[in-house]
Amino acid sequence: MPKRLPKVEFVALIAMLFATIAFSIDSMLPALPEIAAELTPAHPNHAQLILTSFVLGMGLATILTGPLSDAIGRRRVILGGAAVYMVGAAIAWASGSLEMMLIGRLIQGFGAAGPRIAAIAIVRDLYKGRDMARLMSFVMMVFTLVPAVAPTIGAGIIAVTGWRGIFGAFLVFALFSSGWMLLRQEETLDPSNRRSLRARVLYQGVVEVLSNRVVAISVAAQGFCFSILFANISSIQQIFDITFDQGAHFPLWFGLIGLVAAASSLLNAWLVGRFGMRRLATAALLLQLIFSSAIAMLFAGPWLPPHAGFGVYLVWTCSVFFLNGLTLGNLNSIAMEPMGHLAGMAASVLGSVGTVIAVILAVPIGLAFDGTPLPLMASTALLAAVALFLTIRIGRQEEAVTA
Image 1: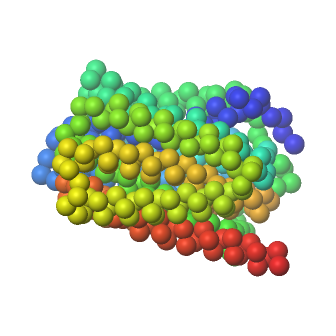
Image 2: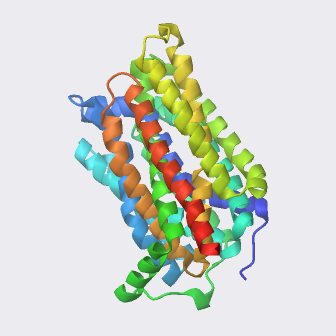
Image 3: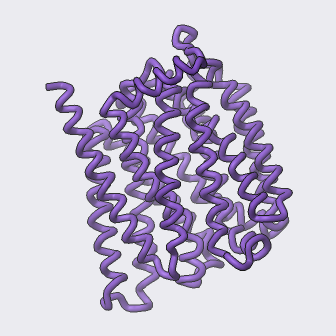
């Protein structure tokens, strides 16, 4: 087995690689009004596409990065992905139109898929079972601290350099994380587990991953959970600014939400060894369904005093991010558990299918913003209901396999 880094450093490194995604999305949030005013003044709601185009690029490239990491190694994929990411950041920095901005963000997403998937494969190379789930919880806890501070960092950069300076920060971030990886983490892919990049071998790998019913159902459930997350992130800046006139304080409020999300990951690390991954995910989704339905009905009816709207929305948003901390990591670990012999391919399929599902569902939800959070709340309840149904199916499938 490859030499392991000290656990604290390993968690920090993997979280840093994961945080490429969070930093690339959340630090953009304060910039959206300025970018919309400059690049798409007639359709300011289209600025949300700057977020989802990044996510789409990441989802599309994810199907390639896993097989690549199984063939040429995890380190090469991470370093190559960082290079592509920086090219996309440069294009976005120089963009003079929304269309060019979206191209740059799409390329950035392509590059971010490398660190995202190869990092998961590294964790699976070195850990398994509940140890893997526990370590992933700590990774997610550190990872969620980035969204807590990213909008504040983004707002500070914008205040000094304008919105284009954000893309310079992306370049620095990618250089730091990939350099850390290059200097400290040796290759974790066992030579005996290397797989050919021939089309037939890739096809057989995808079929093997998706033919496992536990994995297939987990992928679908994870996709709906990602949809909840991405839909909320896409709309959150507009809701704070337009609906509740809290745009000036948005980075601080979002930092609070990020801290709540980090706390859920810490709680998950403590609970997963006692109750298991599926039970925690099921309980979290049930709570999400009940609470989101109740809050949606509250906003739809005449019972909510106008002055209470922002406080209720803030509590609900914290609950969304908190409960996601009890679902995404656990569903991912459930799906990865039986796939140790082709961890890169499995991580690739999981990430690609889940992310593409999320983009397909999150884009229309974000564009449905009507000045109130009601469309988002109702959509969150519906997505949670579907994810809950699928997670319950995972348990029944596991029982059928062991019967």
